[in-house]
Length: 555
Image (cartoon, rainbow, N blue to C red; front, side, top):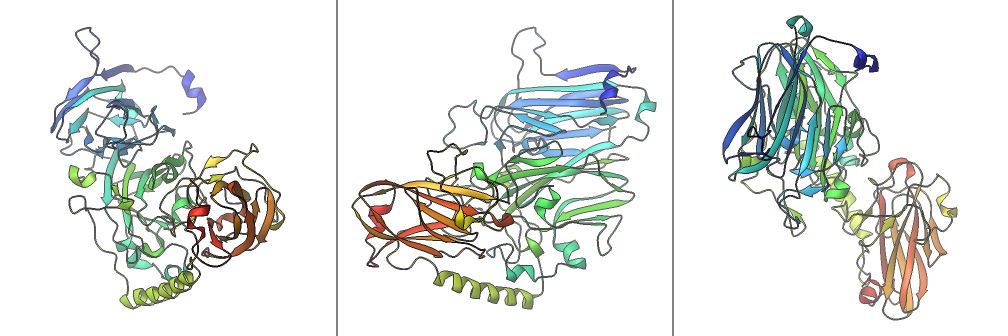
């Protein structure tokens, strides 16, 4: 809305349906019994729903929001409650976009997690500001598909009743939920941006049939955007898939062809932990151990269609990845259309991590078709990958090395770009915005991954303390893709510039004498335009025996 419209006097009747206690007491929350539904609003048209606010403390994937327009036989909005408001995985978090906002005191809490401090910890305020016109009638309903009653459900549905002439040319709002658990990619173990997958050509009907589908609908209208949730099972970069949108039927190339998942989501060099009015991430994997929800809203550039539209995105280049994916598509249509049926409640639950490993049980599994490409191309890609892995393993931790130091690392804010081999020392005692590096699934065991924590261009400092139980001489090994300069107790000990992908376990080494006690390791690291992702750090005794395992690991 242009600011001048706030001053415009219009003829309309403003109303609200809410959960207020009609007895005049203060019991304003509703309880929705298990496996039942309640109508939140039944509004006579013509009119426009201008705002929806809801809050609760459970059932973000178990509760389903349904909205029917103009006595249509099927709902045009059909989504799990959290996902509709931009929060996937039954995780809550505060964020703001122009169409949706969420606010909670329990950021990144996961519903059902054993460490929730109280039953109220999952409380979250949810807002939708997308205008929703209707001609005859609007019915808003919440369905509780869980096995337990849902107490403390509060809501507002704000609306205006207007002259029918004001609705001329306005479409009906739609939203639908889809999921692939997991997406059946052809090589889920192979990482993105590597020769085995980059040489695959995803063209024509292969792309039309194999890409993850965000929206496939008929009619006349315009696509408004989506949110996309990913459980990063593989643990490396989950994007790199191009968006492809076909308008009014198949043709090649599609009407809109993008260059990568983060590009479609209007970011670059991965997804950063931020949320803007038109795009961003409401949930970021760096704060949740691998769960991500990102969004893009085409407020200024909706994709218009006359007959039909198919919105798709590759999952990894050529659809090779096998992570869990879910999405909500938003669009306006000339007439009410039926949103697709959603998976049963058991098939909508968050993918759990058990003892550090992702587990997709048969009860949870909900897959589409299997991605199919030429078996000969798959065999060739796997052969290339096997060769790359053999070379990588040859450079991995030999006998006598300590395990890589993965916990306790902190990263500075991004520093200006420069020659990393001449980088100055920056220690933990200096105020440079030190932030803990989350331990999460990474490309290789022991890898300290910072690609999602900072921008792509510049230097970032990684630092941690180590405790040495007895004095001695050690070989400090640092593996890295971007260039690096290494400091021990404030003194430079080694440096190697340039970029090597993927990061070898052993690249830079230095002999260091460490007295018994606590010492500081700092690595100045070059992000290399986004190609530098992180480091390995390990120790080895100068004699080559496994002497260092207990003496250098932090207590």
